[in-house]
Picture 1 (cartoon, rainbow, N blue to C red):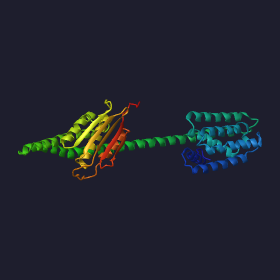
Picture 2 (cartoon, helix red, strand yellow):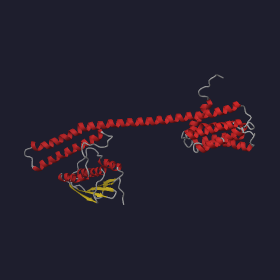
Picture 3 (cartoon, one colour):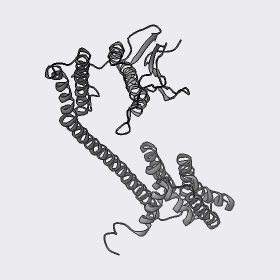
Picture 4 (tube, rainbow, N blue to C red):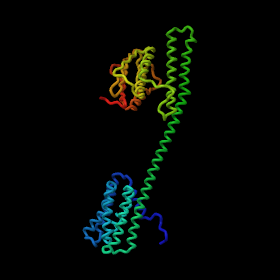
Length: 403
């Protein structure tokens, strides 16, 4: 035999694999197999226990208790390890000669499982208690006529078993930390990719959409001067087009600010519309020829900016859809201040004018639904059964409770 032992012997590797097996969250079909194997070892431990200072039946019972509880060690780690170590301590102190090999294996397995399944303090106390049991067994010469090297081997076996479990615990903790670091790195990478995509979208909006909208504003503003015989209604129409284009540019700058600064969640380049701006919105739609009206009920009060902005966008999108899909219909908007929420409903009747075909499917209602869901509200949009269309939303107001 050489002076140095190999780094990993086959018993150590076997114990390590067994500990890894119980430390993992194994699935249900594997549990009965493990339990059956442990109970088989427990039967061997009970039958192979030799009579000695203890009665034969008592020794067999201790052998069974020193191994069988390991079958449920994942479900009850503390009680199982405690029971196994107590039964093994009785063998160590009072009946070493009656201790079977199977019971010794269960004892070492329980010691090795201490750092894996117990808290740090509990694991150290369990190992210290076993070392004390080994010393007491050495002092009990009347019941344990064993040489001193056997006692030293038992004390060393406790340390080796506990060290094996501690090594496995460290490996498992390192694996958890590596997985957490990998998840954090993946999250940062996804966030960086999203930021780059947002910046790309912002550049496209600025270079393409903003350019075309600004050209619309310029052309609409200069058209009355280029066409000398333009009647007054035409001049007013071009003025409204120019004003709407400038408003679109302002809101587009707000969107660009949000895209370029995703962490802030808002942009300070322009104020966000509020409920007080709904009257101006309906006035613009009325000047454009839409029959639009709004009623406000309930005690009016200041609401969170997110709620007011969401309500404004709902009315804005509903008016736009009514003008596009039901031209000539009457549109009615109802805003109700409730004790703990804000209710909004926009309904339009059957259109009387020609419907303009959409160049591509829109996502306005989908965006409204997402806005409302972010505020934990309720949203519904669909036909009303009489040829019209209804858009309703209930927006809860944070910090207020219903009486």
